Length: 382
Image 1 (cartoon, rainbow, N blue to C red):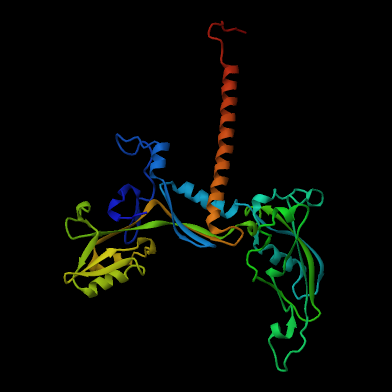
Image 2 (cartoon, helix red, strand yellow):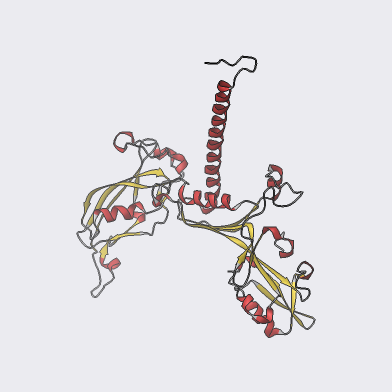
């Protein structure tokens, strides 16, 4: 998605000044500008809304979402954190625990281990665990580890990993116990800990942990262990507009893509006023120029506005409807799959709201028909 500061409509900008911020609220609605409708239009929305991935890894993605209102952008963020379903350990049945970790603390640690289980393959958690748990809504794991002395250890060895067997208990020690048809259903992708190297406890000889765990499907609104992300946030695209010398009241004619500096030292000072990699310095025909190379890297510290030698040479802002999302998965989902699932949840909410609104309209219209008098009937006087 190409970004040129000069192509951004000023109405889309939140303007940053040395000591204050202006134009915070959006004006993209009817009645603000004369002879302009600005009513929401589906065709216009489809024309301007854009989504483009900038960075994709298994557990982290960054993408741009352009052309939506802040309320919608924040709704997506909240759904990602608290309403995308995952599977986590909910019940722990302790048969033996002689480690130094108390049963309730150990159970809490186990519940926070992200599990790599496709939640679409399970039904929601049962209301009554005792009577309603089945292979369709519950996954069973076991943990049975005992620490013992290791034979043939060289004298003077102090490393517990060399001295003992099972001195550390890791998430990889969780064993899935298939129930019913689960072994067939999950044959291609067996349930397991998303990160096998999460440390659960440390043991010493004759200490052991033996327990059974039941995992269910739920959402982060119920408990944070069901949240699929370590973090999910957005920020607005920084806007950096270079201005050549001229009429201070006519900034439109002063906009340039590159700005000439007096010498290399001044160009370096201009560059250092921004975050690393934002400003590029180039020498052309014996003169030094600066240009905006990567505005998304800027932290918008406004340091440049404090330097008097650059007064009036740059305008800072943020693009109000250009959101830079960062999503970091905890491992239940590949990071790239989380946003589409959140979109599905958002669509289901819209369908529910639409159905309720139509129901309310029908009830209102029905009540009006019952109350409306017959225009041809005489009014009865008591």
